[in-house]
Amino acid sequence: MIRIYRILINIVYFFSPIIILIRILNKKEDRIRFKEKLCFISKKRPKGKLVWFHASSVGEVLSIIPLIEKLEKKKNINKILITTNTLSSSKVILEKKNLKKVIHQFLPIDTNSLSRKFLNHWKPDIAMFVESEIWPNFIFNIKDLEIPLLLINGRFTKKTFGSWKKIPNSAINIFNMFDLCFVQNQESKQFLKYFKVKKISDCGNLKYSTSSNKILESKKNFSKIFFNNKIWCASSTHFNEEEICAQIHVQLKKKINNLITIIIPRHINRIPKIMEKLKSMNLSVHKHSDNLIKKNKIDIYLVDVYGATINFYKIAQTVFLGGSLIPHGGQNPLEPARLGCKIFHGPNIQNFKEVYKLLNSLNITETIKNKSQLIKKININLKKPFRKSINKKKLETIGKKILDKTFLEISKFL
Picture: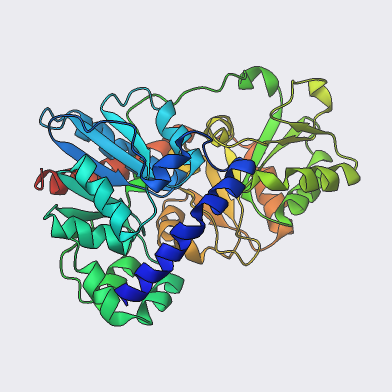
């Protein structure tokens, strides 16, 4: 199977200049640093012990930030290399000014030759892949060099499981290359056990953990923008959910005159179509990227940039999390939960069912079946006193235990 994979990945490599050019034109690649994906390395390998993390995108990067902050305090670690695949994730890392030992690179395409070149240059003392990042050539070459290899916060869905079941011998071979697999839920643990993996640690989901660094405020003065207004936030919305939230706003506006609804779409490339739909409903829409004008006439505050979500979770007490009223499978509720928000969601949350189960038991999240229920719940929640600090404390306690336990296990390899 590895031979077939290597043929396919070499075909991808052959066409990669065209693929990368298209992505640059669509502003999905760095115009200068894209060469890193072809293993043109511009930075020298620093002296001393180097720890390497690979995380695919923004969510995976944010999940390991608290862990990296703890590792930075270890004097025997000189540098921490973080590789990612996406432009947005690189920006997140560069914004973390408190991380003094971190170097960021884009991961090269997983050909046998490029992975060897990368490893021979960086010579990591330990390699850690995050969640479901499985790159066979890198994995085989890491083990050939006898570098310790860990899977961090491993997460595998039923769909992923179904794909690997088609090539069971390859799956057994690849997953048993890891010296230790940390899993974030029981479903992922059973997935690995099926493929005869024995070295599994179920410390818990690192996404419960919180960065020790103070959250950077947006340049916009949110308290001034939303002063004297009742607000609720619809986040990570997908197709049709923005329209549903707008309809909810219209109904709630009859009861709450000073209401502003914040909508944060999952994919901002849909903004033009969302704007068109909202304006057809005679709603006054303000985009986050625009200068604020006529504050008292805003119905919908539409967030059209990435990376600003956390600022709205800080000021909103009520959040509806999208991808759940439609058959998508839900979105991860941990970010708004860590900031103390009360979270409402639809019934389609199979992608994060264990997380939602725990948060439901803590009365942080609540299921709604339809638009009518959501209107009722938001109306009640906006009118009653709400202490976000209570929810924040619940998550902080859980997150600290998971982080400390994971850090202790990793330290054994350092």
